[in-house]
Length: 157
Image 1 (tube, rainbow, N blue to C red):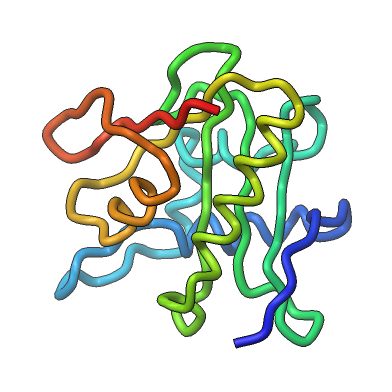
Image 2: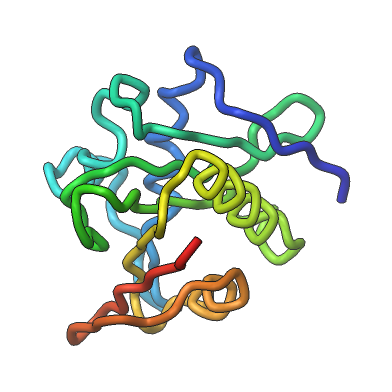
């Protein structure tokens, strides 16, 4: 599958809401939540005002000029928050583009950019049952904490 990874354009910031919804892990056999779930404050921290802070960085994967996936980071008080110097990851792809290595390449490129910009680490939170846990581990993330449902992971840069 041929794709291109590039910086997100300012006029594309609104698609992050679509990708935020796609990032919600839905266990097999469980109905997907309504799209309005992303309006909850604990999820809006990922997208509200994206691009207005110096630590907001986003990339998209595109096929035939159409975004099919995105990874974005910002320093925010989210589920994976470590401290005010550590950007937190959000990543997702449309379902039909998962399993082709696109997510891994998005992660690697974002980690490269963060290191280049002088960040020391990045974090994320992921539900324990999410198949993406192994991808995060392959890209260098380590589990540093957990609760009943989620792992908190850090990648040292």
